[in-house]
Image (cartoon, rainbow, N blue to C red; front, side):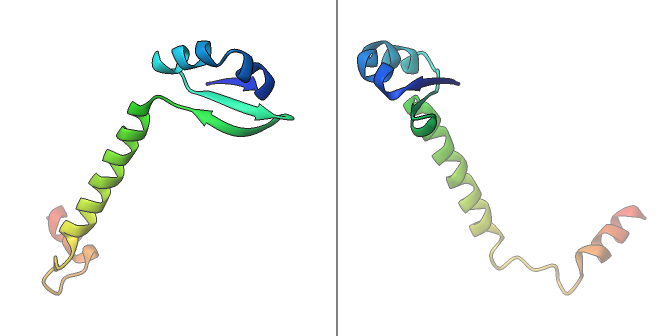
Length: 80
């Protein structure tokens, strides 16, 4: 991940966009503090796919019962 000052980013925006398209993540700073992050769109899509997968797992576990057993009981059963 690269860091670029805002003034420099304004002057070199096309170059920075090319680097981001190549897969690099670039943080833009103002007075030493990060104020923006340029990321390839694929990174955002991958993150969203991950969040969707977690949501589906949570939805799938709804209504699943252990039949009155605790997880500790199931662990003991598996050790026999």
